[in-house]
Length: 456
Image 1 (tube, rainbow, N blue to C red):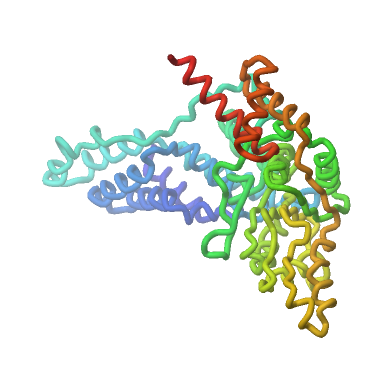
Image 2: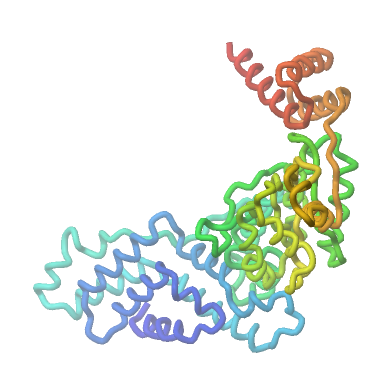
């Protein structure tokens, strides 16, 4: 590689129009500074040395090619933002994306060995005797460490996009796209990249499938390990599931769908069902946003962020209830129906509650308020704002035992059926309840007990 090659590459980076946001990245900035040091007319080997090791330290634990591909995938650019309207995209957007990808591919192909050879040439031909002596022995370019720049082959066989968790699905989609970058010229991957933006997302949404509101309250942050529970893990819940799944499929297919309140006793699988929806429908564009009750006021701001993303979002509010003195229920009522701003088509609200009436009443309210009945009606009407109410009942003994048997089968726990059922009954006597949660706790305990017994 010649100095003029680096000059051309450095200059071409200024012409990035679609993926120009990658130039703000710390590692890319460090590499650009190294290019600057290598391509100036008067060579300064000490500056090159400092910039080389600054970039090398940035790249410890990273692969340069893969890192650049990750930046492209996460880039919040005009192509990604207009991906949902791809049929009407102007040709110049796609042309500029291809042109940018060619430039970034050249950036990824700069090998550390080529830079070291060029620096060695600088030292031999352009440095004074004193400077040459400085870069001998320990400082010799031949002893400089190099960063990782090779994509290792992945196992491309037996890839399954079904019956896996949402995060595993996301990981496999990203791996598949990276393999395409490794196999083809980067510019040729523009259609695949566009499809990825549509199906998976961009920016934060390309790395996560579940989100929460950050501590600052201004942005969403990804949940690294969302619950991998699936619909198949939830047993004796067919009636409740059919209602929720049907509404969710309407939503994903672009039809009108209702907000849902899932009401019932603790441990009956309300929250688990909502979380299982993510693993069931992530490939169809479903994403989950967890919102706490005390964050209701942030809802319009969160909606403003996700309404622009070409994905479908369920805003999940778990264990929803309000004390008589709380006023934040009014914000929720407005969000569900009747607010000035219409809820976007890509957002639904699913909430769970252990209370039939979401807001507690007090006797004083009934007797002292002149308009007490109006006040009570206002509070009780909150649940009515959800289009669908799904009631979860505690299982009877036979249903509970069926849940235990199903969980034992899923966990490959081998025990005589009669013994399993008898022990499950005794477990409920100690824990005073029958529920899916109790069954799960019993199976977890039994697995540990059997493992210790086998170890002896």
